[in-house]
Image 1 (tube, rainbow, N blue to C red):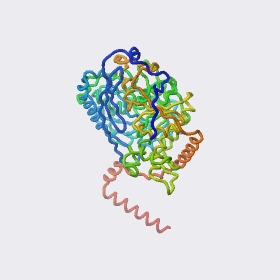
Image 2: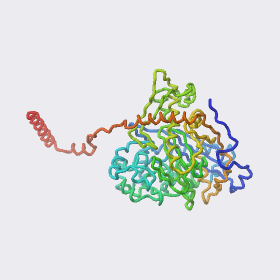
Image 3: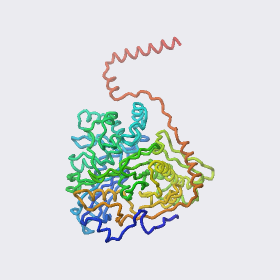
Image 4: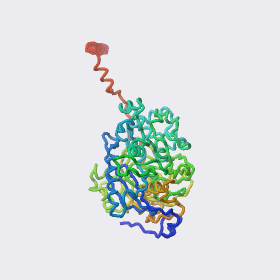
Length: 577
């Protein structure tokens, strides 16, 4: 097994200081900060001490996904809230044994899966439809309609930093308006609210008193102008979305209000932090200087490169997004982002669908049984390819099979696919960000796989620094909430790097440049073969429920006459031919 080599300090430019020196840089308060971590697969609540940010209590549960059709992914918004309430309750129960109580929790931060969209009734507070998850591709036809109107999928990129894609919330809201009668009716009656998951959580925790989001989540909707950081009138008009449906946009770190829901064990506690989960991970990895880059390895992969206080617009398919804004008057920090839709999900597929793995957690053991992937390449484009390709018509392939191929080779190829997709994005980032990317920070559930980490270092040709924090996402959100003005549990001074709980081990490349380029070249050839697989069929008109209702209301005599006329017409056509 390839083991990570421990290094005496972090990958930071400034080593960690002594505990006493660190404390001098932090405002001395005794208080706890809680974090709601709403991910795609799991929901959790963590409690941290301050100012040292040690996680002392946590509870997590799985979140179900509903997939009624190929490429459709939904989640139950009510299950989200009941799970959040359950996790908070269970985590707080752990405090008395540690000498704390719920009254010691000064503030709460929220971090959430981004782009996932929920619409709900402002009067009843009930969801009007399931949450449409970020990776859902049902809006493909809506994308085609919008692109046909503006003639360029990157038409709004200078405004939003994003291409017109199924990925983003604007398309999901538009689809809901066009296809769900309850949503359409609620929009007509001006009682429909829409937002990303953070907005739904806050609406429920405050009994509808707050309908807000932060700049990181808003920057993933395809509706916010990156320059003004407000909803853009042109974009709202293009997608036929009214501004009064949407939340107001705030910074990531400020006092938003208090939790008032009687269903929550957090009632009475202040809310002071909101961050999209990948931005929270960037902050938690302390990637606070331009050029510092992190990758989160989960069901998907998410690479973010800090580009400082100026947005960098990509010509190679990367997204320009807001990394964080730590207060209403604080500078806005931007990032370049590339997303891999299928990473750990490929291992789950090998386990659940084709049964090559008894458990996805055994991937390292199976892959290590063979020295290489045997020239097998796996492109897991189950719902198309994201950055830098942005090809919805791509589909997954496994190529290079021979009579000697074993399941171990395919499992190893699946791990390598994660590394190759990461390199695709790193290549673009290196070209466009203007900074030298000389290391990669890694976090997320999959980083426990040592072989994957070594393969990534070998594929990218970069040292890989693996965070010893199992969840830097929650840690980033905790810092964001704790440092808000008016909360002041800590003073965020990233350049001094005093946070003693941020440690890394490192994996160094063991391959030559020639070996890397040869294998990467074959990967690019495999990707080419996956493109253009989906061919659009000419659509025939399908009758809606309204059509059938209209037909059923026709008098029987009209139906008989029209049927007879069609019969006569068909007979005459037959005679002529």
